[in-house]
Image 1 (cartoon, rainbow, N blue to C red):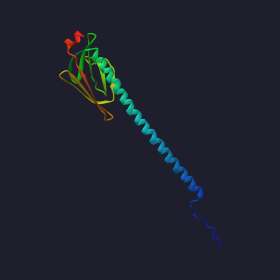
Image 2 (image 1 turned 60 degrees about the vertical axis):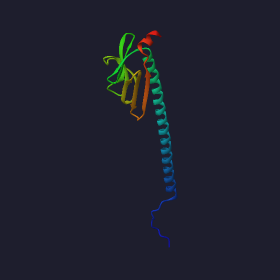
Image 3 (image 1 turned 120 degrees about the horizontal axis):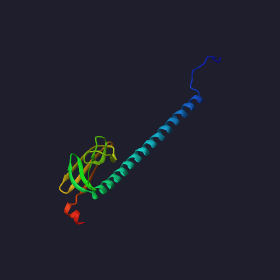
Image 4 (image 1 turned 180 degrees about the vertical axis):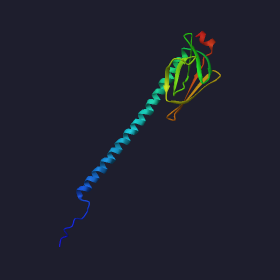
Length: 150
């Protein structure tokens, strides 16, 4: 009357274990997604803070120096009777160096490309970052005669 043969079947216990594993996997995936989102927000905020700090540092450098020229994608200045240059190095950062490119003071990193040019009394600095961001800084050069009178 009863068939004593074994029948392959998915038992209730196996179904519960499978649901538990699937539920755990979904929760882990959800947690990792939230963590990734938080990390991306942090990185974007960090890059914004780095840009603001760079702007402030560049402003101070330009304010306390005598502007010479813009050439070869660099800003050439005289600071404390020493010629300096600010521009993109061979790497991915904007550096403050001496006029021959020696010395090393990074100002901002993660720069894919930069363009530095002068239009009249305005210096333009446009940076393209590796993350795809593009920022531009414009500085008004005070003519030498006005600078000496101040």
